[in-house]
Length: 427
Image (tube, rainbow, N blue to C red; front, side, top):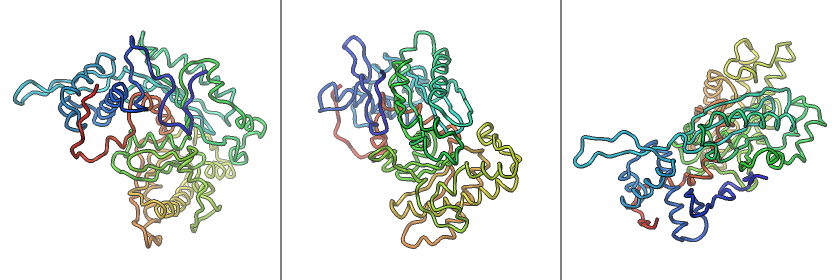
């Protein structure tokens, strides 16, 4: 059975220590031993290069507090491990040209699986965050056996897209799934007996029947937030609330430059947030700002709703029903934005979802108008912004989890002030 990193454990992976004959990034947990310090420094270097795309040993030393000699040794070791590669030398200055280092795309791979209420996605991601291959499976409702079949056959296909001899560099499977898939049956329309199968289904155990890859499980909206934090607007803000409008709306919280998952991994479960707005159709955000509401409206008016999940980049032809849904969604999001910012002083609210870019633009513009019209006395009105990742956010966030858990540090380390730090010379 694979090692499992679930919703309550976002810090480490079982089995990361290797024998002395095989160098591998080690876990930085425990005391400040020589091995622990080396592990931390290796992760720090990789994390900085991941953020800035490429850095020289001098830049690494300046930003991290490591000596140039230490940074140089670490970078040579990581290059020998196949995790870093050299960029083009930068000439024109006194002395030898500076050689920036960058992550090597085929240095590591990971799998991401998104289990949605209307479709599943499976991706192969390389070390620099590029999707090498993606598979998509729509369905009327998700059932465990079908999802496992999709994953099993998909893994075999994705494995063919890893360079020959590099299959050992596939380091894990990240899974983004809605918590309590068996709930909200009336909204999804799935049969109760089949959907209830999820309640006692051991996802990790089932996956362990056909792969030994470590498994990381996370709430789907939290995974989407993680993708925005890594690949989108996340680096611009220390603290922000993130809303992802899917079949059911969810979200995530970022505090001090890190995705905050909460005690049970359910932080940012904004769907249950009570809202009070003029266009209210229910008491919670989920009843006012979810795609299933648009699906139901289209069905009532004899309009085929399947393009909502079959064509997530093209919602042409829905006319006034789409416009009305956008307005209702924005009104509810404005109320929710004011509410969450009254609890935590967020710099921004970022909105994304499983819809076309033009729909996102309209929702965000309308949300801004409603926020400006609301009473925000006592709080700083947040900046309302569009997300940048889009429909793929959940599966990209899932795929990034193994890479970050195995090789990189918590992002708070990368955003500290550039004040002088005590140098860590130990390798």
